[in-house]
Length: 119
Image 1 (spheres, one colour):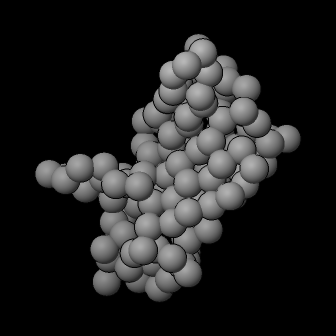
Image 2: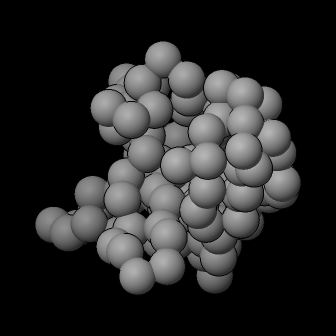
């Protein structure tokens, strides 16, 4: 059974930092790409950052220069370091894994962790 478990969310003041973690089980971690997404009420889930199996990264324009995605293959964990947080970063953050196998994508999601940034 595949599980992605996020943690590290919470309440922080504007300008502060948080580090989100996503621990994966039930998958071959180093064969998966990962992403962090976020969602606010009434809006679609949007991509924040992604990291490939070769550790290539991409970021949404809104978080470039502030957020850093990384992975630790030895610990089956993906991180999202969030700095200079703004009220607009308030959302539920989700971890996602993706692997191309047997001619299709195998995608899994975590349950989310809430981040609230106060002004």
